[in-house]
Image (cartoon, rainbow, N blue to C red; front, side):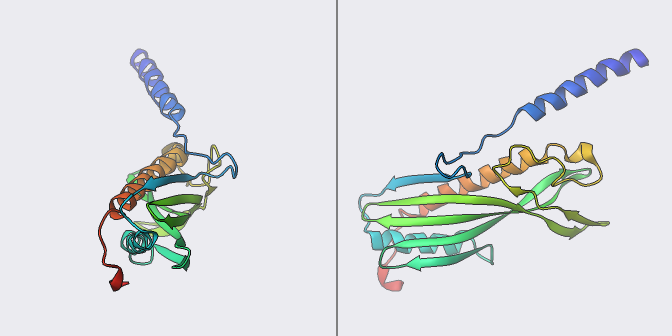
Length: 195
């Protein structure tokens, strides 16, 4: 039996080590050193006003039910700046469970035939939730931190060890999905007179 356990232990250990080494690298802005997703998209047949209207409609649609707020909007210079929030789940002892929120800033700038988006200032915020017992997920802070052991962990270190990377992976997937939906929404024709 001992001869069987040792090889299993080695295989399991190497599996965990391999998982730990597969870290996602989020895009870092070289000027601000913040995790930043940005891009300029050309849409030749749209005015700045039309793009602004589409951007505002996308913001409301993408973040309905209080998951975002528009902090600043300028319909003369065609800018929208707001805050978004996505819910994250983490791997717990009994599968996925709530892992808090990742908050971020969204900036949208519009000109005739093009627009620019910037998603930045990502910050993990903990949460409390009730399952069979009350659980508190600590805030882990800015996503620029390379490794955040313990910040989003509970009593079971083994089960929560890789959650910082998992949180970054989920954030990356969610933001790329939001950017895709923004790009799709910007090509939709909206009657400007309705805004």
